[in-house]
Length: 60
Image 1 (cartoon, rainbow, N blue to C red):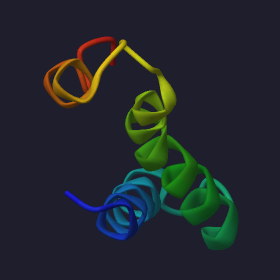
Image 2: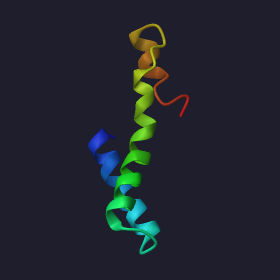
Image 3: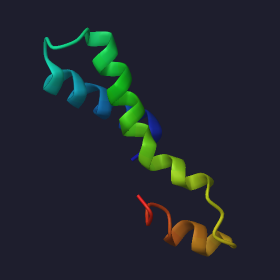
Image 4: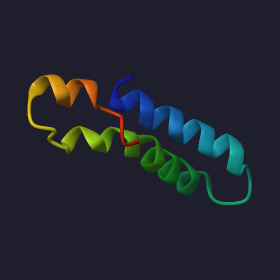
């Protein structure tokens, strides 16, 4: 899944779950951040391109 879709999905789920407990923009912001976190392991260098591809999301 691409990053934009993960942000949108995280935001939508967060807004649906948090409901009226907090402001909609706060729920969408935190959901977008949480949806993006699994992609941050792409910055970890495992040594070569093959390992980088195969170990993507291994830690998360």
